[in-house]
Image (cartoon, rainbow, N blue to C red; front, side, top):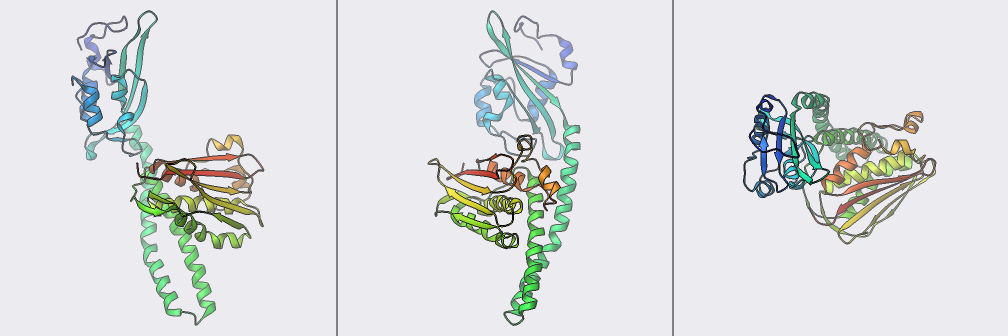
Length: 359
């Protein structure tokens, strides 16, 4: 590292090349002033040359890689770009070939003096691969287990359909029993699909034009039997609305929200499901229940996978605590959002928004 001082301190000390942490210094114009060996090594893993005379342009045009959740990075999420532009940011990303990729914790820090203002920006990079791979172990185990359980269920579902066709309308008792089997197998399949989706963390979508009203109506229909069993009435208010989305994933998100609303509603209660076009470029799916609601302390955790609130545990309400996490993952994958308004004892209003057109 050989460069003039930045912010009143020298940055050309050779001993920095012996540090495991990557350190790069940019001036206010975004030019590299100094970088140790680790900084260059980590940047190359991301396909970046820190000496590039027009680094910001190259970063905007080049590949952006993946964040620690395996979601594709957008250019504005690049911490290197933030450092070159004098902005502060931090993010953990995957870098390098898939078979030997490294997890890098990157952060940019503005160097400001009281007299001259912004003197430059420091980009710090640490290799956190060991911890990242350790954190992934439970997810990988869960994914493998879910796959192993999901595979044998596929022929079971198929044979149940064949048996139902063979029986026809001749034996009502047998048909009713088959319907119970099919309903419960479908419930297990839904739970496994939720687990598998969460393991991807950033669901891959198959986008196409679809009718949002039909998607919402199909999700409500899938919960009709659960609602009847709990004597809960579902009010559906939708208007045909064409959007570009992954209809199957979006239905899964709405199904999870309606399922939660039904489970937590009191017997004889009402769940309202509505589809509205709030902004010109977005649609909003609203699910309202009359359940116990959420305490303020719970709202901070409701979207965490496997989170079950105190009321759910106390009342032995069935479920794995995946519904809201799944819905949020799907909403975010569409470029949308999900929000909850709730007070203890006053039910909950869940609002899921997605763009009308693909991102």
